[in-house]
Amino acid sequence: MWIIYALLAALFFGMRGIMYQWTSQKDINRNVMLFGVFFVGFVISSVAMYVLNQQWYAWTDICIGLLLGGGSFASNAALHKGFSVGKASLISILSGLPPLFVVLLAFLLWDETLTTQQFIGFVVIFVGLYTIRYSNDISLRNLQGAQWGLLAALFFAFNDLLGKQSTRLDADMFATLTLMFGVGSCLFAFSWLKNRKVTARNVEGARPHWSNIRTFSCGLVIGLTNVAGMMAILSAFALGAAGLVSAVAAMNILIVLLYSRIFLKESFSRQEVLGISAALIGILILRLSQ
View 1 (tube, rainbow, N blue to C red):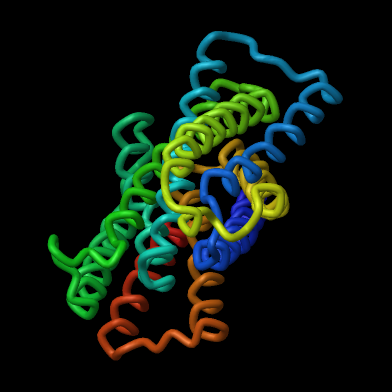
View 2 (cartoon, rainbow, N blue to C red):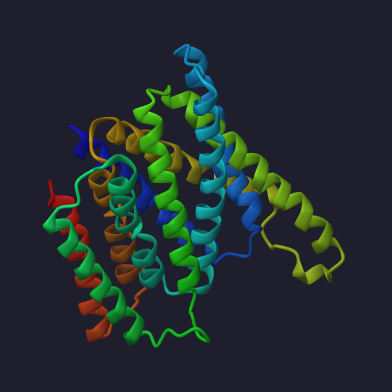
């Protein structure tokens, strides 16, 4: 049953990725949009927490929720920034690497067995990444947004581990999500208000073209996919191994890649196709490992 929830998470996070890429190309205030994404999640989680009579049973539950909020703030901000400055296919591949970190850390933290098949998956992913890096001529002087994709992957992996830990502690899901989305909302709202003072000193043309109301409303719509994805992945973590759930959920990159090829008309070189294929095969190997 865990694989159904993980696939649903992949679907919802893939939809979120597409909408992130689309809005990243618009003249909007990123913090306002992401504030809306997290605010709708906070409202839905709070209502569900009240209706289902869920609560926090220990300080560890609260700490995990707070840390999830900080990690989600960083990962979502990095992902949206990556899409705004980098190639959608490259950013989606790099941001789909949490399984690489999750399986290793799950082995160290919870003694989840690292099998030969999983090790092979890691090697294949690394080969794919090196090929993608070589084909895009990525270097320290010309990162092409790759740093944001990798940063997003690190924080998404951090969140996956915290999500798994919350299920190990039998924490109520909506109580955890309420804290996560609440902290994320506050951080993005604070970033918006702080940067608004800076923007006010700039020329009129530097202000976002979209109004704050329109931008916030767009964030509310995107937030529906985000909260649905979080509900699905936490349900999967409650039933399956952290590394396997993370690997299946990472297949959301297929949706973004398909979108970038069909709608954005991104052309792939032979090396990029080989690199992307290797990275996907590596993730698939992790997904099939038991």
